Structures are given as C-alpha cells and as structure tokens.
Length: 420
Image (cartoon, rainbow, N blue to C red):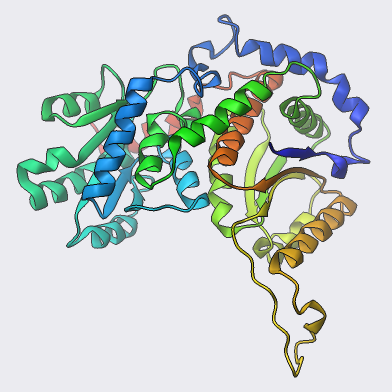
C-alpha cells in the first residue's frame, strides 16, 4: 500500500488541525453514497473495482488478445477521460504487444500525420472511445483513420474497429450497431475522468499486454482499505491537508514525480481535479512537474516565487532497474565520491534535498510513497486519487461530477465553424 507522509507540512498546518477536519471529511465521504447529493448519478466509480460487468470484462480480454494477435498498431481515439487513464497506465508500466498510438486528443494535423505514418504498411486496428461520438477532436480523427482502414482492408475493416461508447444511444453507438463493430460500454453512472477502470481504459490497457485483472485487484484492495471512516485513513488525511492548505492561500497543487515515464500521472490528475473542483469560482488549480528535470526551470519559481502553491509528490522507490556510477581514473568531474553508488541513491538524495529546500522556502509538500510501481500499485493509485477527489469536491461545496464550463469553448467553436 502507498504511504502518506505529511511531515513536510510542519509549520504550515498541524496534525491537530488535520484531525479537527474529521467531521467535515466524514460528511463529504458520506455524500458519495447519498442519492440526494449533487452528482449522485455519477458515483458508479466508487464500487466499480468490485461491481463491474464480469461478462464485458471477459469480452475486453478476448478483444485485446485478438488485437495483440492481428495488429502491430492500435490507434486509440479519444480525448480527456477517454484516453488519459489508459495512456497513463501504458506509459507507467512495461507493455508487451502492439504499439498503442493516441489520437483525437488535439486538433493538430501534425499529430495525426505522425500516426498515419506509423500505420503505413502495417496491420492495425482502431479503438474509438466516445460517449456520444460527437466530440469534435475524436470524431474528426476517427473519420480520418476509419477512411484509411477501409482503404486498406475493405469490408474486413469492420472487424478491426472497436467502439467504446454509450450502451443505448448516440452517434457512435448507431454507427457501431449499423456496421457490426464490437462495442463496449461507457457506464452511465461513471464520468469520463473517473472511467479508467471501465472499458474506456481497460481495452487499450489490456491490448498493451497489461494484466487488467491485477489492475482491478489493486483498485479493489484500495476501495476496501480506504472506506475506513476515520482519520487513520490516508485518503482522509490527504483530503484534509489539501483543503486546509487551500484555506491558507495555497491555491495551486503541483503534482510531482521523479521518473519521466510517470509524467502522464500528472496529466491524468490535472483533468481529474481540474474538472471536478474548478467551478463556482472555487478550486485548487492542478499543475504538474517532472523532477529533477523541472527543478532546472520551474524550480526557481517554486523556491522563491509567490507563496501560493504546495506540492503533492508521488515517489516510487524501485522503478524497475538501476545503474551503478562508474569509477574514473582521471576524476575530471570530481564525481569519484559517488563511484559504485546506484543512481537511485543520487535520486533519493535529490528528492530529500528538494523536500527540505521547498519546505524552508514556504512551498510545503505532501508525499505519497510507493515501494514499487507495478500493476496493482497503479490500480491503488488510481483509486486513491479518485476517492480523494470525490470527497474533496464535496468539502469544497461544488458538484464534483459535472463540468459545465467545458461546453463554453465548444459553443463558440461550432458557431465559428458554421455547424448546422
């Protein structure tokens, strides 16, 4: 299980203050089970690691096995919650299978062209992921890649399209039914940013050779462990700490990792918290950084800039490999004092030194530490943050499960495009 360390908040908020938040956190947690609470129609994710469709899960595993057998590339098409969770897992964990390419998450011709080049001369398939099928970015991308697939495979193209969409309605569901594409369900009671443990995330993750049964197992363990209703629960402590920091003017939460392949954890978290909390003129602004790289750019601001941020650091001890620093006869770089030491030791000292420096500089840190990042650990991490976000949104006094502001740019864009 992950370990939560709040010691770097000393001098900013105390354990007594955190403990005093228990009644607020308890009430907010209870709202996730209250049918009268705001957003109660979208809390299916709370019990999803246990209460998922087992028959569909088996179909997902079967479809993933087929993709792995007949495709060198899988083009996953989606935006926001339709791709961020899956891409996080496929970046963080080692994959064994076809290359998974993500499109439909921008309006960049350059990005589409790169993936078009990747599928040229190869066997490939599509997983299009959209609740409605009408979101512009993935709809445009799907039109482009479906056209290419039909040109390459003719009528057999329909056997290489997998649609993850609404169970009963919408443009994509209609297309899937009329063309006989195998389809999977975006659950009605699970919003996009909470959907990584549904077919939305599970099909591309499984196609990458990742054991989704283990992923769900890790999330299920977390679901049971973090349902504890007192302040010994790490989720409660994290929720209390971040809300106390917000009330003291810490309006930005910087999610930090120390492994480049973990950068998409930050991308997933930015959507999860940004869409859940950023409304009604409220909310902690979610940002992300990859250390130690960004210590040579953002580090100056974090250390000496305006004192309106705190860090949530996700640190993994064993990242799967290590390298010993060699001895040099000339020692021209004066690094022989590190000869023989593993690079992970240097990273650990950078981590500890950064925590101390930022605490001294008035940028306190919450630390989430894991022994290793395997499939079960990632399942736990996904659930830890989903539950934290749902509870925290209710403490903030907003509906954590809607996103009314997302539609504003779309309305303007459609008007400018002349959409009928």
